[in-house]
Length: 338
Image (cartoon, rainbow, N blue to C red; front, side, top):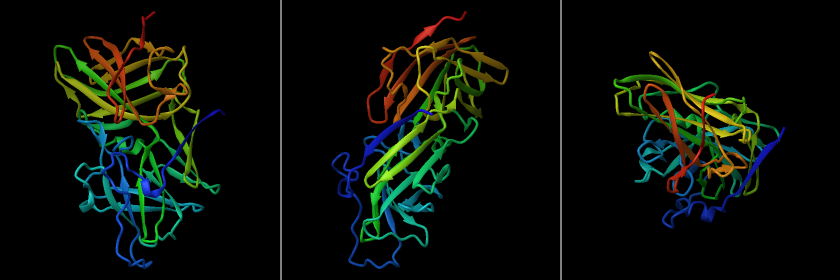
C-alpha cells in the first residue's frame, strides 16, 4: 500500500504560536508548582494555518462558547487519552485562543512530550505510539443552509508541545484535512428543497481519504495518509429550501486519498424533494493550477465547487484557498456528456 508522508517540524514551546507577533505561548503562573493544581493547556487555533470550528461567513475556525468544547491530549508512550475542557472565560476576542483544563488525574512531568488532537472522537492509539484518526462513515448531515455545525467531526487537527514545570502546555493546532464547500445558485423559476449533494469519481478512484496516522518523535510529527479511501463524498441536507435566485451552501471535509490522475473524471449529483440532477463531468488537468499535494487534496486548504441549477445542474468551476491566503480561481477542464 502506498502512503503519502507529510512531515512538519513544530516550533519549540517558546515560539509555539508566534504567528502574528502578538500572541504569547502560554501564561506563566505563580511559584506554586504543586501537583495538586489542575494542568492547564493554552490552545490556539486560527492564525496562519490552523482553525477548528468553522465560521461560515469568513471561513475561519474559532473556539466556541458552548458546553463540551474540548480536545484530547496524549502523553508520549501512553495509549490513554485525556479530555481537556475549555474555560469559556478565557476565549480571546478573535476566538482563536483559550485555556483548557485537564480532567482529574492528568499529570505530566516537565519536559514530557504531549500530543493534542481534535475532535474528541475518531482517534485510536496503538502500542507503537502512533495515533490514527478515521473519518466518520456515511455522508455528513447538515441542518440549514450555510450551516457548519457538523463539520468539526470531520476536520482533524493536531498540536505538539512539552509540559512545563508550572503544569501548563501551549498548543498550536495544524490541519490534517481539507474542507469541501458546494455552492449552488438556484436559477429555476421557483424555490427548491434540496435534500443532498455529493461529488464522485466516475472511475471509482478513491480520492477521498478515510484515515491518517500520526507518529511523534520529539518535536517532529509525521502524518501518514492511507491511499485507501472513497470514490464519493457528500452531504445529506435538511431544512434547506432555496428560493429562486438564492444560493445553497453545503460543507463536508476530506483527507488526502488516492492521487488524482488525468483519467479521474468527477461529477456532482444533487437531489431535491422532487428529483435529482447530475452535473456535466469535469477533470483536473496537470496545468490546472489546483493546489494538490502529491496529486492529492492539500491539508489546510478549502475547495469550493461552484454550480448553477437551471433546469439542469451545470458545473461552473472550482476555487481553492488556504485558510489565510487570498482566493485563487482554478480552471478545471469540463467534459461534454457522451
